[in-house]
Amino acid sequence: MEEERVLIVCVDRDNDLGVKTGIKGPVIGREANLEAASKLALADPTEADANAIFGAIKVYDEARSIFPGSTRVEIVTITGDEGKELQADEEINRQMDEVARIFKPTSIVLVSDGADDELVIPILMKYAPIRSVRRVIVQQSREIEHTYILIKRYFEKLMRSPSSRSIVLGLPGAILILYGLFSLIEFQKYLYIGISILAGLFFLEKGFSLKEAMMRGISYFGRHVGFSSLIIGLIGLFLTISLSYTRALSLASQGYPMELIIARLLQETSSFLALSLAIMFSGSSIERAAERRIDSLERLMVTGIIISFWIAFYSIGQYLEGIIGLLGLMIDLLGALIFAISSFILTLRLSEVLRGRGWK
Figure 1 (cartoon, rainbow, N blue to C red):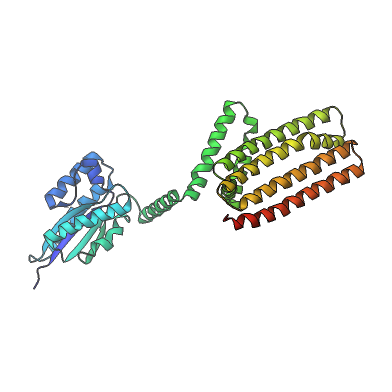
Figure 2: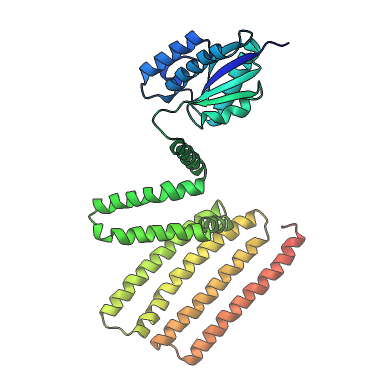
């Protein structure tokens, strides 16, 4: 009949023993475990793993008195890793393999200080059946520890998700920075407005994936010449809108009627708006043409349509101010329409020609 060998296993999954005392696992034998537990308790009297090792020694003594003399009993403390859980489990598996080759257990009694250490049971069962599980918990309830483990796992999962991490940490961090900046420039009265706008933009981006849409828009214009022209065009648009707003306030303060303000703005700013937009699309068209891509003509056609709109808006401004009459307006609008249609037809014709020359 095969001799029965009972192995008392204490698991320190996060390697508190190694970190706080420098003792490496596996720790085999009663005296070695007693010394390890004493050193750990002296290093950190609040350490639960020290109590677990003492508990394992007590179980070892009980087993020696309960089991018959033909049964061999041994005690070992297995340490994991303070890093990731997978690394800890791999280290536990390595140490158990080492112990199993030496002692060859027929059954295992697991002694742990909580639910986290008991997650290694599948690893231990590779080497011998689990005969019993003894839990050593000091001044805390089972429910509290399970709750702690659950919260810990959800928090770790949350930190691994970039989208969740941006909500939990990114948004509060941005609000704190905003609070600091507003306090620095003494704009505290606008703080709630700033926070509302920031939070609104954040949730709007999450709801409609504005970041992805912006990235697609940027990639549409290109990476080199197209991207440079996009930046120049956006700067031009920003300056034009800012100057238009200032100009409108100036005209309004002088008592100009709304119709005349609109007329002046259409004449004074439509050229700059058209120029900024044309720069954005023409740069992209040049880059795509250098790559022998047919869609460069699409951007060129957009530039032609922008010019058509500029003609139309400028003429409407002149009409509202009384510089030209209705007939002149109709002629200008017809000319803008003809220019837009011509741009479209020319694009189609050029596409056919360039496809014949190997453009994609």
